[in-house]
Structures are given as structure tokens and as C-alpha cells.
Length: 103
Image 1: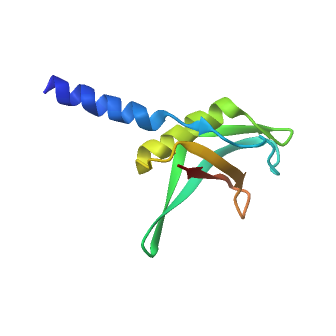
Image 2: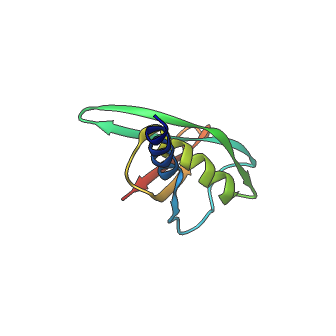
């Protein structure tokens, strides 16, 4: 039992890892705290995932530490294999920061 639990913990930790691959941390959003949102597609259906951690935006700049923590939460939920955080942009209604991962 203990070995299985350790293996599960190791797998969970792997999903916490996110490689920051953004060209800039600029975002066109007013100062505030935002949740991350990411859509994943299976065949013709899509599902949205949300972070629990808020990401801080000040003077149109995303605070990278909170961004990486929140992105790790989304990767853990989705179990997506891609580790590269490639895009972070304001959602259509400016309520969220939408992120996209690559592999």
C-alpha cells in the first residue's frame, strides 16, 4: 500500500511542474486578482478547468509566481502531458486569464 501511495504522490507532483514559455508577462487587464481558466477538448466536446489560486495583475503585468502555481493546479486537474505554458490572455469578458499549454 505504501508504495502505491508514494507512486501516486510522485505522479501528482509531476503535474505540478509548468515550464514558463511566455514571451512576456504583459496582459491587457485592469489591476486585480483573476482565476486561470483553460479549455480542453475531447472529440467534439470541450471542458473548462479553473484554478483555485488567484493570479495577481498589477500595471498590466502578470505576477509570475502566482501564475505558475495556478497553472500547476490546472495541469493537475487535467492530467495533460504538456508542460509548456505558451499563452496567457484575457478572457473574452475579462473575468479570467485564459491559459494554453503545449507539449
